[in-house]
Length: 248
Ligand SMILES: Nc1ncnc2c1ncn2[C@@H]1O[C@H](COP(=O)(O)OP(=O)(O)OP(=O)(O)O)[C@@H](O)[C@H]1O
Ligand SMILES: [Mg+2]
Image 1 (tube, rainbow, N blue to C red):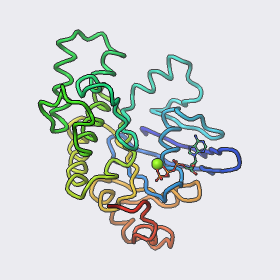
Image 2 (cartoon, rainbow, N blue to C red):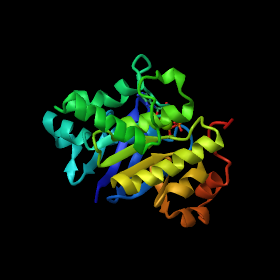
Image 3 (cartoon, rainbow, N blue to C red):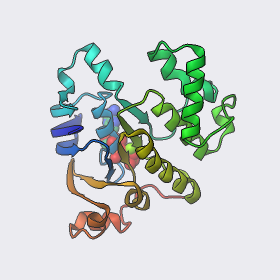
């Protein structure tokens, strides 16, 4: 099992966000987490990479319990992940080349030529060419999202976490990001966890979908199983009643 989450609890003061959450994610699958705004999806992703510390329970990444890791172990564990944050969270004052090469400079000894080669390769993987010297503000939302994905894959992660990758994009932009997520799965052999409100996107990219509600994953199934769920909460969510932020 790539990721195993056992009886995970996380609260902020009195707010219990996760209340005994269990989940297993297999190697190379694309697992989509759905749930209402505020249900704890982003918190869940942050717990996986120890950007937030869990209160109780266990998170195992390839068999290793993350709270038991020392500093080096934690660093190695984080290097297994590529993160595409909610919003694109590019460094606004750095150009695209600097954004994508950042992790390579920080975490590898590659020389300038090899760094350049890898940056070009990652930008091409996400369908971008010739944008290296542009600033993030000069690109469209969809292109910025692609840059964020290029940045996330530059160190060859085993697991990619995408937090709302299609939020704020128009339908055409969203479709092309969905296609990219699907294509990358095959081209780089990573396990992907995608948080989204967008059911069309979930059905299209997921191997399995899990719904987070009341601090737990209340149902897991294939897109077809979730589509035809008889669980009233899942049913209501997928029919759009809880579709989250208003899409424009
Ligand atoms: N660092 C924090 N300190 C205090 N409360 C927090 C913190 N991070 C998240 N929360 C709270 O935890 C709850 C879950 O937040 P989270 O961001 O995970 O929701 P979400 O499911 O990702 O929502 P959205 O779909 O809107 O992104 C929210 O009520 C949020 O206000
Ligand atoms: Mg969120």
